[in-house]
Length: 239
Image (cartoon, rainbow, N blue to C red; front, side, top):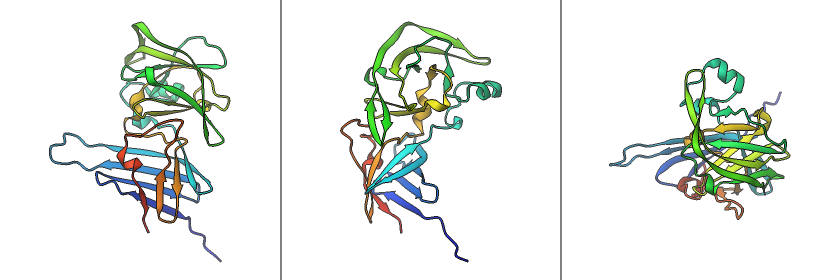
């Protein structure tokens, strides 16, 4: 009887400031990414970043499709177990407002720089721009109370709802926020961008793959992670 072993490939960045690895598992077409900063004398804090999801092969390219971050990445809002069970997310909170069926309204936390945000869907491995109908800062922050905590609404975007329910929002600082609207049962909600402090969205990122390693393909459509030295370095295959 022949035993079939799951094939995996592991790659390590050539960046000297981090320990960064990508692992591709061909048995289920999933990937994991880990990035750990190597602290130097005088550094106050370090960091660890992660990403996980699925990948597809397109000729000599590897295309990543991230999962939304799970709730362990955001615990700043003190929600009860019952609240999380109802709303599903610790970092997305529904807001009771009416909206057109073909639109999505997202409120953002106070650290978000919504002036530079762009909205996309991804269809056939390609980014497609979505219309932003309104981009507005509230005249006065609005208080939202939960059972044991509260937060404020500061500013929002009203966005064209993607037909395939796959929404990506990018920012001028290289941010990337992925929303699988199939898993979000409301069209108006508040989003805590802090959840992506240690988790990275790679949805739609492409790497050229050869026998020696991986290299990020720079996009003309969007400039996510252009400041990430580890991600923009060559990844060498670990034999």
